[in-house]
Length: 290
Image (tube, rainbow, N blue to C red):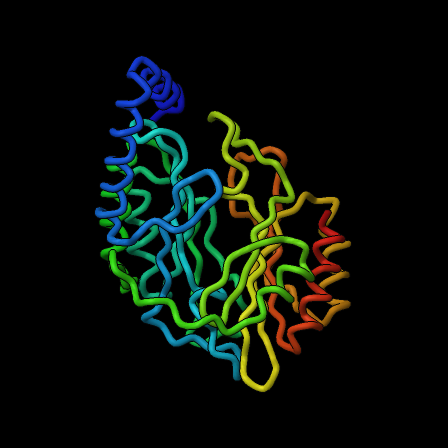
């Protein structure tokens, strides 16, 4: 949908009484969840639907990668149901790449990046970043048809979360940011760069340009960390030095978006070691990124 038409649709919703708009919006977002066959996930200011690759057993060296650490695709919807914007990324095996990319493009989505986030993982996986605009339920139906070309497991009743297995007080306290946790994984998503997408209304900053820092508790007192820092160009070298100085490996430097202002660079990382040591290094990296 052209941006001008998208904005006109958004403005037209203002003519509907607020109470009725709220009821209709809730029903529409419920429909999006049913179409995508996953429940909504907590998110700040937008509607998020996660697609963890629980079907894959991925290892980096001797570390089994939990889906919550680095194997969860997602789609985030902002705006009104009649005029929504969706952004996200899908995690695919090499054999799934062609049907996913072709399917996204054929259904009117933009593909903004295809690349790695990890390094040396087995089996190899790729991340496909995408975006689109239009009625939320139409976007969901189109995305559902793309997901059918993959083995991504989906259920409106996902497995019950396992008992918490990581020291969240230590994680959030050291990083200075509150976040989320499930099972052995805890993570935070601070926004370091306010972003506006050129050619559209102002985009919620957490939709496509939040920094993501995840940690997974391992056996033997070790932990693994993965994620990405979303930063401006002037912060790239200080951040890299902070990561390497903490024995955390940068695994990728690239873009996720097309047409954003300011331009955002995403730096992915991987580290394994005692949890307190990783946290001190990540806090130094956060301070460098700020």
